[in-house]
Image (tube, rainbow, N blue to C red; front, top):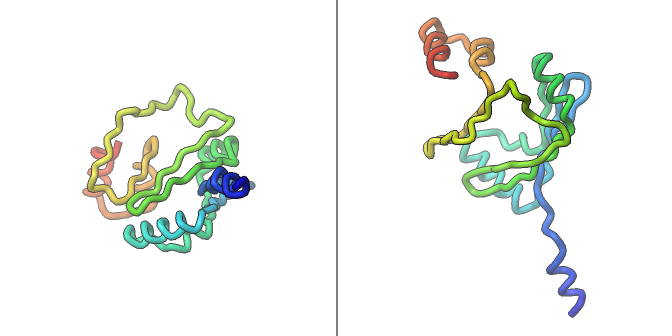
Length: 145
């Protein structure tokens, strides 16, 4: 009877995402339980995202962003994987924001959203990566603030 009690009290392994970096390169690694991996694969398939992303991926950033992320890394985030969403939260020993950043606490996410990317200012990134003409550039400057 004691062994059964110990087994039931054993904490369930939590899924997490770990972001670490060195020399301006960053690596994101997922550590998922079997059930979370199955749900994540289903979610990625419905969002039309390659499932091999769950094996981890590397990325680079511009100099300033790289320095800021390198300063606060490694980052450990807890993942909650559901059929239609992947939520994450975590903590770091270093503040992610400073007084120069304005955080919008009451940001409303449209229910029709599939994927959301949130950042301080994504317009320069979009303009650098996408060339769709002057109309598109004007639209992004006016609507993506």
